[in-house]
Amino acid sequence: MSEAIKGISKRYRRVILLFMFFTGLCSFGYEVLLERAVGILIGSSSVAMGLIISTFIMGYLSSFYFGKLADRTKSKRKLVTMLAMLECLICVALVLVIPITRYSLFIADYLSYFIFFYYLDYYYVLLITIGLIALIVPLLMGAEIPIAMKLMAWVDKEEGHDTYGDVGKISGKIFTVDSLGAGLGGLLTALFFIPFLGRTYTSLLLALTTLCAGMILLFTHQWYVRQMGLDPLPGNGKDKKANYLRRKRATAPYKIAVVILFVILLIVANISEIENRSIDRFYGGNVRFHMDSKYQEIVITEHEPEGVTLYLNGQLQISELDDAMYHEFLIHPALVTHPAPRKVLVIGGGDGGAVEEILKHDTVVEITFVELDIEVINVCKKYLKSINNNCFDDPRVDVKITDGRIFVRDYKGEKFDVVVGDLPDPDTEAVAMLYTTEFFGDVKNVLKEDGIFVLQSCSWFEYPKITMSVVETLHSVFSEVDLYLYNVWTYGPWSSAVGSSKLVPRSMSPKDIDAILEERTVTTEYYNGDTHNASFFMSKNPFLESARKDARISTIDRPILQNPWE
Ligand code: SAM
Image (tube, rainbow, N blue to C red; front, side, top):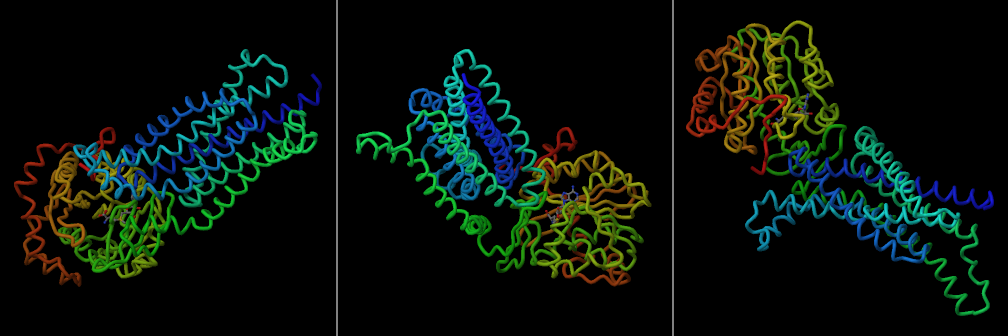
């Protein structure tokens, strides 16, 4: 065999391998993207991970069917065109599947009425709906491997190799580059693409990469066929009709590619519109801002009567309407109980409402404000000034952008009088770590002997088991633990829990509380001595006593996780 033929085959083989590398990269990148989007939808990152990984693995089973199809297809041109077309379809799917999954809540609603799903819990209908939508991508991707292998085998055969004998080598090479691409794709997407491009443009990038990979393979195939003299140039024969048909066949893949590219460009032009519409629908309209930060999806909406509202990963965090009620009751019970709160640590609370309430106590000289996500602060500075009153710029406030867990674990400075946990509900493993006995133990270490810790402990009415688990976990660390209940307009019945080695907020008299508020010039809308006492009094109720039986201590090894569908 001539060196020239060897060179041509080598080039073509390299392009096939490169193609597999990029398709692997795109498939795992998309898996990461989908996991994140589904986690936001269903509120549990581990269920999202399990669902998407299983869906992708099941979807790849389609390679069984496509393998047989590839064997049956005698024309290599058809095979390569099939692959290029497949990439075009994958490209469209990569752009559309995530916005479509946002509609799964509504689709699942309809599906629940079908006899087949009627007896299933809504949660499982939702998971099935999401799984079915997500399945589109791996079903298409599953076809790539057998077709690429078939092409490699064909090139080997043209070179004069014994294809049967080389099957191991071919499959080994294909799987190796595919896995390398997949590994890189997963990492790049999680570490760089999502944080810097956001979810929408990451899916677009992966889609266009897929499309380019398919097109490059298609054009390389045409080049290979011409170089190897396997396909006479159209128009060389004598029969006019045959010439015409050959020319049509030869140019068909290009024409199809151009049409599909055109469709893709239309989609690309409308991508923000598609994304906006699906987000708008999910949040009930009036989305004023949305972005994907390194850690979470941040959304700002504006509705009546809630006013401007912040959502993180699809979960309501705070609205203008709730601000006074939620933050006054989170902050003042602990602060008035402390005889002279000077140095306060706030973990979370990126909207700034908690810090704003603490600053009302004129005894406070220093607030260390530890927030994981700078973007939440930036967004709230712009949209939620009415809640934070630009407290970030107060000279007493020292903002630290870091993980609260790491901050308290490594903290060596002067201890705090009060620590506040204004964190999202423990509905993901990452946040649940900040509700564990290990974390509470670290908080105790950064508190002075007569210090006090307070944290929001979720809706006691919707998740009594979670609220009581927070209480039980606090008991594993602090000797004085208590729970108090209040109402937040849009969240409904809410709770916070306190832990201390010395201080007992329940023992404060209404008269003393009112006097302290007056002395420290603290003005409030809802919080005062009477409402303080009422909220502690209400926490001794039969509903919560019964939930205590199922509550347990949350640990890093076995964190308590709030499941919104339970
Ligand atoms: N009021 C809210 C609620 O009821 O769910 C909590 C609001 S506040 C906006 C929650 C903040 O905690 C978010 O800004 C989030 O970025 C932050 N956060 C989450 N995990 C954190 C961590 N490990 N360390 C510090 N801040 C964290």
